Length: 147
Image (cartoon, rainbow, N blue to C red):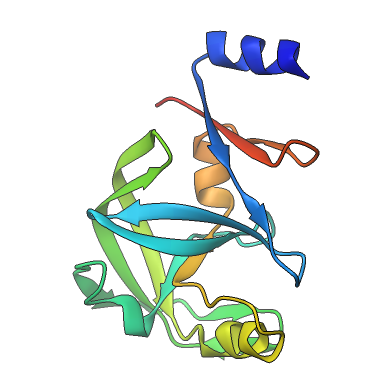
């Protein structure tokens, strides 16, 4: 595995540690607009998002959106959008990042029921595609290519 890590480093990939929770979710620490938070790494989520309760925390300029969100156990949820944010995961940075904002209470309620730490949001396929992500499950590393 060390050889793969060396190749990815030469290809300008940033190595980011993730954790696996009791609920089998992959979580990463990320910083939005200079503020750290805990996020689920979700390859099935089309967009990265945060909960309404995190608008002030991450200093977001939220505006209404006509798009409805849906996810595990919920559909037709109202959303907002926040554009032009700075995202950093480990040493990987995205200087012009858009976030979907919606009600994450059902996600955090499920985590609480399993006595697992709550999250402020979800890192979705938008980031994973942008960073040409590689997830190494055995070593618990996410690799994102430098922009």
